Length: 114
Length: 117
Image (cartoon, rainbow over all chains, first blue to last red; front, side, top):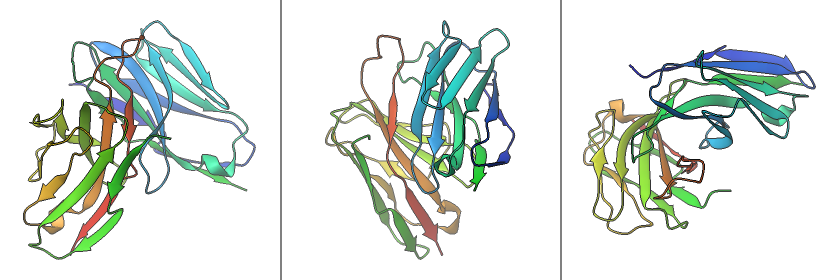
């Protein structure tokens, strides 16, 4: 069964601190892994997309890593800001589907306190 | 910022009413999707479309129906709303052809929060 598991479920950090979110998946055959940011009451917005051959990708203060052998990914946020408070969702796409089907994790709810 | 719009953003309605959630995109994307998301849970695909006159059911069974008469428009309808339909509904779209890296980027609308009393 294709699954995406994220940890922790929720996280509270102080402004300016760093944090790392984890994602494990069993989706096969693997095509790509995405990290989305979803603000409360809004739709998800893409942060990074990594294919099988990529093991790290950055987008500003966000850095994602991918280990396709162990089927694990992480999202590292540097120098957190209050606006980083949101749900961060790990999404994996399988290969061999013209739909580009996505499998979603439940997200990590990040709260940044001043 | 993706050019995909959903209306209404919030809807509170009584049991038994018929409702239509609107979704429009101005990017000319052929593929469109409807997802359902409960608080703290993952998104579940309930409907998708490859293009005009194409509609398919997704992974999660839903009593809702969709139509695709125009490329830019993908409305979702509930003939008789029930409290179990209370949820957030997210619309998304993507291009027909994958990127050079081989993936389909999906762009999400802001969602409609539906409450059925």
